[in-house]
Amino acid sequence: FRLLSRQKQALMQAFLFFLMFVAFFPLTIPFDLKTLHLICPGIIWLAMSLAIFLASERFYLTDIQCGYLEQWLVYRISLQTFVFSKWLVHGFVNILGMMICIPILALLYQLSFSESIALAGSLLVGSPALLAMCGMVSAFGADGPNRSVLMLLILFPLMMPILILGSATLSASFQSLSIAPYLALLLALSLSL
Image 1 (cartoon, rainbow, N blue to C red):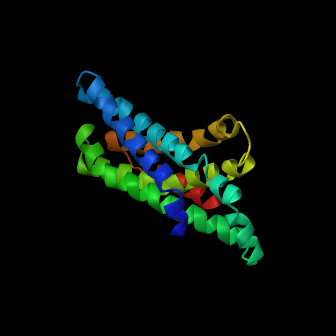
Image 2: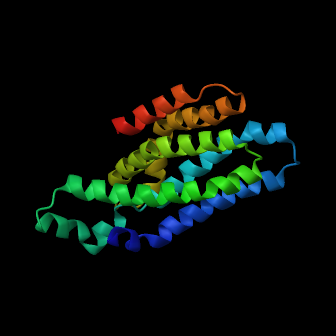
């Protein structure tokens, strides 16, 4: 968890961004349950993807600048171990932060218990795919001058299926439809990366 301590500020910033993004939407529109349920899935998944992008923009930057990556190579520890451990800690903290927010989201968006479970399931199953994509794309421009722009250009088309499936999961829950197919597709995407 030393990896976590080096990027504590970026992860906290991403968590607060997510919380503020999803909290301000219901407060800025006139209260209408239909409208809230209509925009809720897209807002939550967009906020989560932006928060994960924000946290992983400098995913490898500190490791490259401070020489941690070279230390791993000197000790002959495989790069796969380095990347997986970094991704695991990063994912654990991000997903834990999102799960902590679910009761607040349920209150703000007037979600029932079953809808909250659907939201938690979709975030839990879909987040690893987003984290893996952000980690891979972050490696492309790890030390480049315009890494944010490069990451967005590469990442945006890759994230669309996950955002659509994640939003569709919650929308299906609102309509009392089965969410299992959506969760299965999200899980397949997460496991394939």
